[in-house]
Amino acid sequence: MSKENVNSNLKNTQKPMGGRRGGPMGGFGMPVEKAKNFKGTFIRLLRYLRPHKVNLIVVLVFAILSTTFTVYSPQKVREAMNKLQDGYSAHVTLEKLTNGQNNGQKEIEKIIKNPQKAMADLQRDLEKIKYKNKDSGSSQKTTGMENDQSKIKEAFGKFGGIAKLSETKDSNKRAEICEQLFKLGEESPIIFVLMFKDSLLNDSDSSKNSSEIKLTEEQKAGVINAIRETNGEIDFSYIGWIAALLIAMYLISSGFS
Image (tube, rainbow, N blue to C red; front, side, top):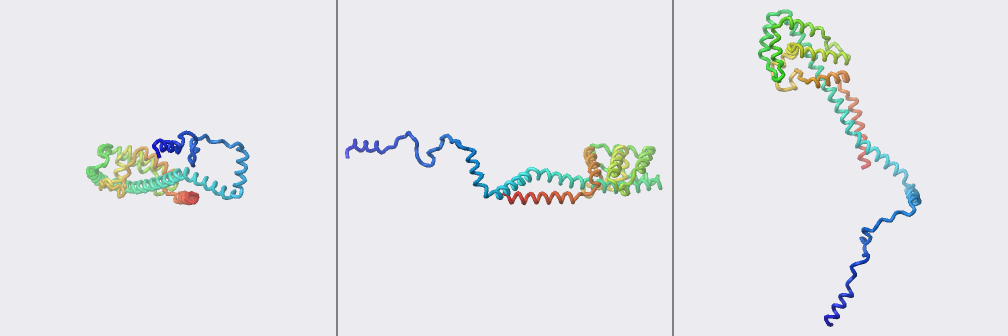
């Protein structure tokens, strides 16, 4: 066969580059045709799905519950944690202030019975006390007050006039007592020294073993509000209800997934 015949046969067997190609991807890039009768198609779809109506309703309900769990579960967890935190902080504060109030009353009774010896012991204790927060200046205020007998008597009188936490059960009254003790401790730091003398003398860095209270003004306001709301009790029933609800919603969400 000649060379010219071979070239002629190759040209005849080559496929044209243009035109529509076949195969499954042949229609790629072509415009999508819209349904000519959308209403009729939709009605036929509903007729087709009618036997599966119950299944569709179940799927829809589970989908709604799953979405609800995803949206509201963080909020419920936050509410439960806030309840737990408020109850715990209120309980710890009430416990420390109650013990401190009792200890302070005992120290004042010692001073009243034997003023010279008790004041000498107090002076010695004040010299030993090292406040952990040196920038607050609390030690300077305290050491400058023990020589002012009139201020000490006035502070003792105010302290004795405050109702006892151990004898009070109402949450609002307890909150008021705590507020009065905080205020008196700021005006007369020696009162807090008498209330938490053992903790201050030990100078322990462990907050777990310390009975001293160190709170900012914002934290004090938050604790007082927590005492009013919880009365120092952790609402385990509410937390348990939230936990049960979250578990149920999680199981429903898992079942849908």
